[in-house]
Amino acid sequence: DEILEATSTNSVTMLDGLLYVATGKGVMIYDGKMERVYNALTEGTADKRVRALLNDGKGNVWAAGNYIGAIRYNPEKDELTSFTEDNGMPDNTGRNLTLLKDGSMAVGCSAGLAIIDGDNVTKYTKDDGLEQPVILCVLEGENGTIYAGSDGKGIYEIRDGSVIHHGVSEGLEDLVILRMTADPETGGIFVGGGSHAYYWDMKEFKALDNFKKQAGSIFDIKVTEGRLWIMQ
Image (cartoon, rainbow, N blue to C red; front, side):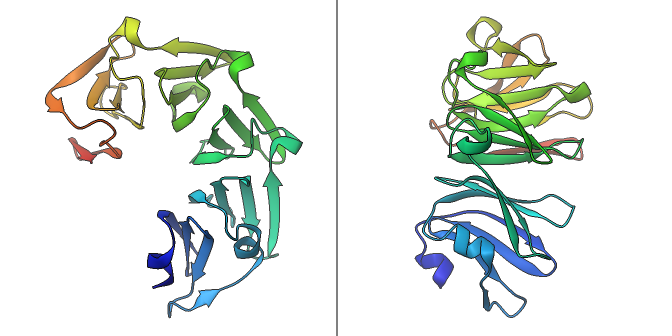
């Protein structure tokens, strides 16, 4: 009932039998009997809009949200490590979390993209070529290349510290990028825009035939057993 009373439920993850729920009123944690659990993470995010949660596979739960930037929580020590503008983040609004292959964490923010490796933060902002710095989704490609979907300017490719923009000139009509997922068979990327789904062969974007939806209605894209699944 407490989850339903929250302003929104944005993300969930599990660690050591506990259910972590990101809500508009902070992180709520439940044990196996659905009893509330209180700790440093629930206290540190109280009354904040938490947008994303992620178990990093190393015993930590990450949270991102409004006014908190990104938080790494170690439940064994009941200890928070906060990443904000004070220690290198683009801003204090973390919108999404993506675990990269090397174990670092990509955080899409409202003023750019952050890569957190240990306690070190590397950021990309307008100053680095992100003309529209609101990052809605992140995908890791081959050889450590990062693709960041923006809120109105298409996709930014970040490779070896350089930023390359992809958009209208390559056939991408919808520049609000909600989701991206790799096609394991071809190496291309499926892209969910504001109202279209696209296939990007890394040269041009091709809108999927007969698939135009209400703007903002594509929430997730998955490729499973040769089939493309789109949640809207």
